[in-house]
Image (cartoon, rainbow, N blue to C red; front, side):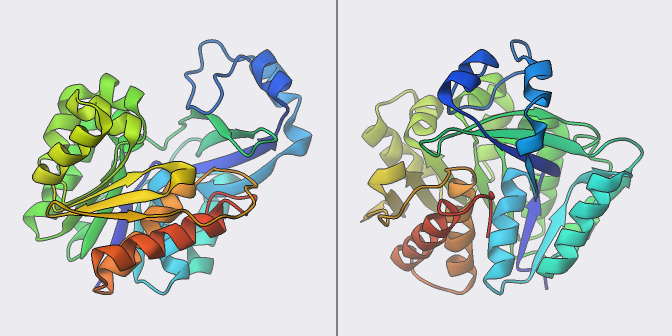
Length: 303
């Protein structure tokens, strides 16, 4: 039985360290995912000699982290018939992750991750075939938990909803990370529909406010009425877990920040491992905090 399946935009992360001045010159808004409109790609490509490559995608990061902790995992998405695609598949094999990826004609998607000296991540993506979503969704049948994010909803709203509804109809627990207030705004109706099926919701403070139109604390209370478990990620201030309206505040671990890329995905990995293993909500939150602390001390986006 697959314990945890991730529906992901299968992207190869291209991680580049930059200064704050370089980031501004390239046209990026710091600390956010950026649309391609204002980005200086010629300047970005000139920095490729600094690049390090990692197989990624937000739910994929969570799956990699969970696999490292002994959970039976699988990943569904689409890669290209190129070297990046081959490297991506090889990584799944290395981690013992069941490979449910479709291979399509065309380039594997890529995501540029720019890391400033304070460890903050800034990104933009070129999707390639990552959003084709022509895979066979019956491959996820029998999964205990399905985890996905707003990035996938933005890429293919109808298909993502189809996968989530299919999984839920087969008794699978749905775990979801909205992946940013901007995606919530851009996919307002699709987000509303998907959230009806979500059991475990991971949100930042900004996302909670965007979802509810209320201030942070009242937003958390409302979301806790709508979902079995709500996890509010508060960065360096830790996290708050709400399970059936019972509140648990968990402090962050104090570690040296190398980069914040994948920290939230790592938290989800640890939390979901705990959930699948039958730990209580507080223990799950502590496990999530521990994995996130490991990830932010690393160069890459996952364990």
